[in-house]
Length: 402
Image (cartoon, rainbow, N blue to C red; front, side, top):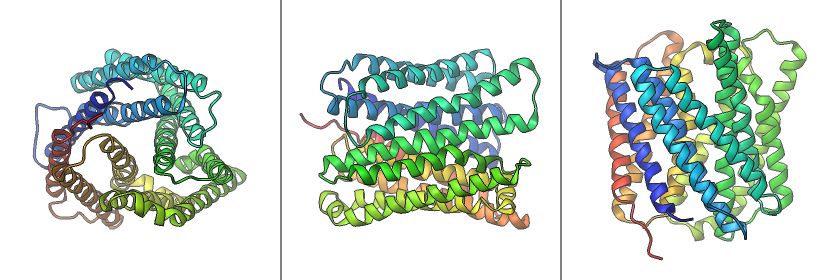
């Protein structure tokens, strides 16, 4: 795809901005930053992380997949959609920093949302006649992205009508987050992983792929119920949610069983750092699934949603340690390798792990309402290390020779 390297590098530049916002947030919490509104900073950080880096990476990498697998395709429309996403992302960044939720930030958010609908429409059209393993994963990913918008529309309606029902507000928020994190992001990453391994000659059978896919799809679709167990749900609905969670867990088991069987081939086609990234992301994914499985216990679910540190640790586990790390590694595959680039990636992996470890400790200690001394200062230092590592990666991305 034309200008592919530029677009990928620009997505990493967006990641640099996400990291800068993270540093500012941590500095304000640990010390003071009186001229910046914390809520506006947080909203800019979360929206820009979602669209400026994660979604832009997925758009570019899926477009790259299409250019390699679909014989006759017009790629110009995808370049336009990627450009629109960047435009809306940077619009959200500036408008949310300026005043949080107001008419301009809502306009940019709406543009980004509608843009995803158009991308999904073209994706369905262009993949119509393709027979390839990753196809169903990408179609499901964008289906979940569109589905998640129902949460946004509900929130917008409540805010516009000034009739906010607290339980519906929370449920709509979790609806959006669930189908973004566990649907759009995770399914996109799995589709990219299967194709990445296929390019290395590591194939999964159609039967295995479909079995894993449907188990995870059903689990994700019904698994939204895990986010609203605090509601007074009928027993039969609770049992359906538990069953769906077990189904998804079994799907993940089959996926890792297949990875284990293919590991000798993976070892011969990847370098040690690439394999470590696989293990690193896989570990984060397993922890996410185990925590998700544990949350079917009502007491555990109430605890998880009752402590802010636990929620933040869980979201960072999925978004940063799992999804962002995997996507960053996929982006790096498109550029020349160098010792400095590998060093930047190693620093990134270390700093993200330290961030998650400390957030996890804070979550555990919050059970007894015990504060970890200088935790916010340590988190600020870790956020600086994350920023430095991404800057090193960005500055060492060199286009491969054709």
